[in-house]
Image (tube, rainbow, N blue to C red; front, side):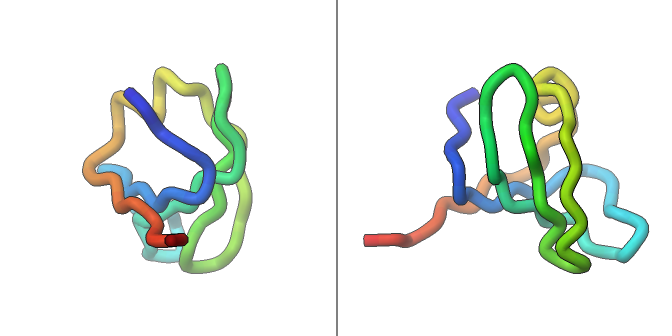
Length: 62
């Protein structure tokens, strides 16, 4: 799966704050994600992200 820094992803399960949208801050073997609801940051393995992803929203920088 081709994911890039800055994209917004929606995961199957919501964060305890209620939001299920995350911004990608770092990619590689692990992802650093920031919750769009409460700004909490987590590190999660690529395998878990790709398994639980529901939707990818591309950013519109240009």
